[in-house]
Length: 560
Ligand SMILES: Nc1ncnc2c1ncn2[C@@H]1O[C@H](COP(=O)(O)OP(=O)(O)OP(=O)(O)O)[C@@H](O)[C@H]1O
Image (tube, rainbow, N blue to C red; front, side, top):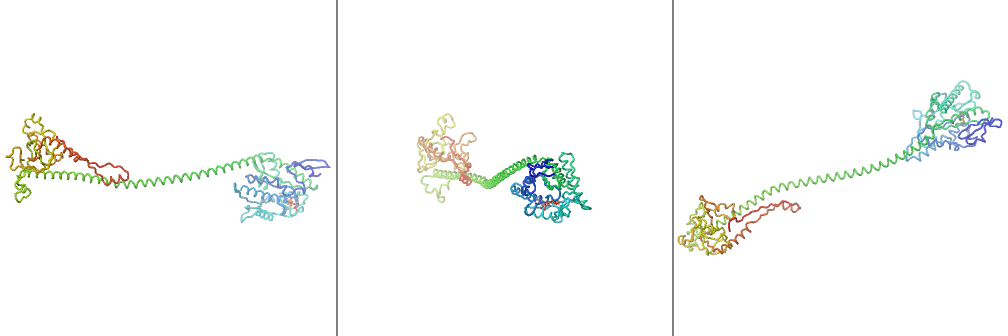
């Protein structure tokens, strides 16, 4: 019997007996003796490098009798690197391709299952187990260290054989401890065979704990794991039985389905989700930037609002002071206006009194005595006259027409003819037209009689000098309310300031009175506008403040 490697195609390996095929084993790939290089073998192992970087457990192991090339296949030599080194190189290449998306941390552990004992061949510090590697140089150093630590003992078949290899006890002629060692190796391999068989039949119980080796490989041979097994056989016909045993074991392992196809799809889906996650992260980052800009904008607006509020507060504080000043100025302005009005009234009153006194003096002295009018030493008028200020200057006044007036006095009481006729009390009153009109005012020397009233009946001497308060202007009703007073008998008494030298022609009196009334209305009925400094200031800044108006109505309410 022999193996027909020449006709091995598509993973079919046929056992020939006497020139005819006796049994055919089906595998994924069959590499004949001296036909394949290390790189060719690794091509089938390359996809597993991608799987492990996608997060799956991967188990690659070599199975076969001693001296069949397990160590050579997995580790190789310096000139021809084995699967492990090529596998690591493939992983680092993929990591470089994914460095923008992922960050990997690669660590290496080397264990030896010997005599049913697990020994860590790598020692890092005082802790055995794991070495972190970043490149192929570091991986090579780690594997060299573990290789040197391997428990290697000589056997008759292969003095450098590792004890993880399968041996036929009878052929190797081992004894004592070496026999015990060989039995343990076979136990581990048998337990591995049982686990493989249970996985192949999808048994509910997988006996991973029957040996340390299967216990160690539990996560690599379980569900959702990828496993690659190299079966090493010796083409020598002397080892044909061992070769058939290994081929049967490999056939059982090949029948195990770990669901690699579904996991590949999961890997694609995982990548798609990772890409979506990256896209969402970018969008979130963009949104964060926009939010940050909006927050900055809001912060700027808030700052401006605060600044405006502060300005408004400052303006309000500035306005408070002028407002209080305005109130004070209003009071002062009113007081000023009132004082001015009173002052004007007093001045007019004083002027009126002076004029009245002058007229009285002129009227009561003969013409020849005018020279001593203001001479109190040489018999002036005031010296001889007894002034009765308490007695009002009233009583009846008789004005005859066509008598020129010689004074500026404007207080004239007119008596209507009809009223005189209907009223007996007024019989003695002078007949004058109701409306005097514009009086012809001429400044002339007063016609002063040389004697007192006894010589001319038309002139009525004033009984006495009126009090000062009775000569206030009749144009100021409030201040001159003494005028038009009625006596106790209810008779109207006319406060007349006309001197006895006042004589009016009715026509002239009418026109003159009308003219005087017009002039006095315009001059006395005036409006006084007072502008305070604050108002002037507010007008300059564009604020319209109500004008302080003081209207002084001084007008005639009597008949003219
Ligand atoms: N494909 C190969 N090409 C060239 N040399 C090989 C090949 N396979 C194995 N050898 C050589 O055969 C010898 C034995 O191989 P190796 O040590 O790898 O066998 P093994 O299965 O690991 O042995 P053991 O189980 O006893 O450790 C080595 O010298 C190795 O170089």
